[in-house]
Amino acid sequence: MARKATERRKILVVDDDEKILFAFAQVFSQEGHRCITAKSGEEALGIVASEKPDVIFMDIAMPGLSGLETLQRIKARNVPAPVIMITGYGTMQTAIKAIQFGAFDYLTKPLDVEKIREEVRKALPDRSHNASSYEAHSRFKADVIDRYELIGSTPAMQEIYKLIGSVAMTPNHSSVLITGESGTGKELVARAIHDSGPAASEPFIAINCTALPEALLESELFGHEKGAFTGAVERKLGKFEIAGRGTIFLDEIGTLPPPLQQKLLRVLQERECERVGGNEPFHIDARFVAATNVDLEAEVNKKRFREDLFFRLHVVAIHLPPLRERRDDIPLLAGYFLKKYAERIKKPITGFSDETMHLLLQYSYPGNIRQLENIVERAVIFSKGDIILPENLQEKVSANASGSKTLPIVSSVFSESRDHVLEMFEKQFVIEQLRKHRGSVTAAAKESKMTRQNFQRLMKKYKIKSEQFR
Image 1 (spheres, rainbow, N blue to C red):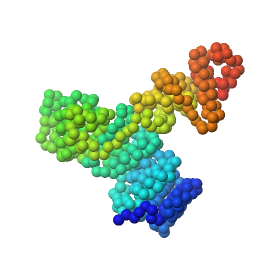
Image 2: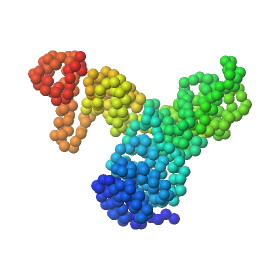
Image 3: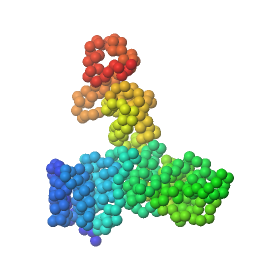
Image 4: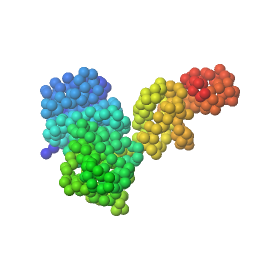
């Protein structure tokens, strides 16, 4: 029977930041626990051996032995204590690695006191389970191809990273259903599951269920025998067979025709099928990952999608939130796309102006991340300077944000917020005048009823060059 969470426990906190150690010690002492601290991975390993803590909180980024390396060594010693990893900057790769190396959970800073207490309450009853499960988990690799990396550090994305890490450790017969609006990155999640699992070297086969007519889709999925239909001059292996032990990604699964829904259900149930025109079944070892931007449950209620197939696919569900619900990730995503296209187009662009970022943050993105990427790519193409200006954005982005009555409040100090808004106005005013007069400083200053010297002073203040507008 699990002991109560209020019983005194030994909790080890590993971090090279003394302020973090002090804060944890205060929280746990108030809870009646004994808090032991370590400033490095090497020190933590010695304490684990001598003190045998009940729970371990450990930072990932530490000098010397990193948190992930320390976690691996702790688990290699079969230490039963749950290890909760903490980091100031959470990426998909570190989250997946932490879970796959045996971490009980993965938290990002800043940490909430109540969240820390909740983690302790959750971790203590599961000690024995966590200890026994690590041996199987440690076999799996966690390398993720950068090309397919998910970008985001919001809590919603951190939970998705942890789900990916957990799912990748399950057997291939566990199907995954990824839901979310178009452009949210569903295929990236599917690829991350594939690349984080033991069959990462096997094929990843992506199939768009809307791209082919029903007759061709069946042949593409199952393959066909020679002479199965007109034009079948030789045997052709289908995608299901080619996938081997890899991953079969069925995009837009909600559009799959009813006859193929029935055949797919049989495949998922029996793990075998025949080629079109054949009668010799072959075994299917791949994992099925399906994705949809429609409400499949609603489609089931309308009798347009088989209920039994829905439940077969819905073994593990991952929902991707739209970009408008994770706006804190917009600067990170925009910066990623800026670097990508600036390098590709070979332009020395280093960032976004404050006004530009404000516009990007205000836009609703009906096309989600894919639309943000297109917006940034276009801005890079049309930019003439070293930063992206509002005029480089698509007009609908500016129009959408300009209709907003909300001004950016950057500080609780009135004078600081006022100065920030004033600077935004000054900079935007200069840009608009230069754009209107095609870079003519004299004409822009004259219409603004300013001296040329004062207008140039504002240009210099905000590093605006007239050449950008010619």
